[in-house]
Image (tube, rainbow, N blue to C red; front, side, top):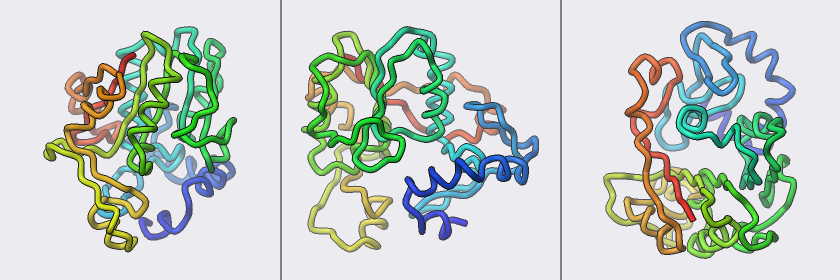
Length: 250
């Protein structure tokens, strides 16, 4: 399954899954795992990963991954964002969130990306076509590890966020690594996958990721939300073994 899924670009999988979702949900229907984002239950989740295949990672109906399900639970249980009247920017919108967020009448919701079919505005994160301090809340998940000039991207995110606003910017983060590692001389796709975890990643973030966001002007913390969940919930929702949610405030 890993080899099949990784053959196709994510935008293509997004479009295909919309048409196949009813059949997929029926085929995998069961009671072992639940996606908290839409409440659907399955007999199994699918393996996923470029370098290390993670068991029960991908929800077959919604295409949510562990980090998506963790973030949704955080938004529902620890914030009022889903109930507040907000102007929201979603960069590289994840399909599993897109429908949910788009349906929120209390949000003015804009999506942006260079390639995604879900993007309202085609734009480069390093040159966002938005006004200063325009958004209350910005989602930018698993994007910055793809961006060569992540410093400029962080500055742009800070620029378009309102004072008092929040940026949620999940990345693959190695909390055992003190400093971020990148090496532009590594160009072979297989070697990049082995070193960076995915062929199109340009770095491995370490614990200094929070300092990098702070250097752009944010006040950042890693939220240990997993500690608030029971072991039963972690297993049922197939959540990551360990992951902090980076929350950056302006």
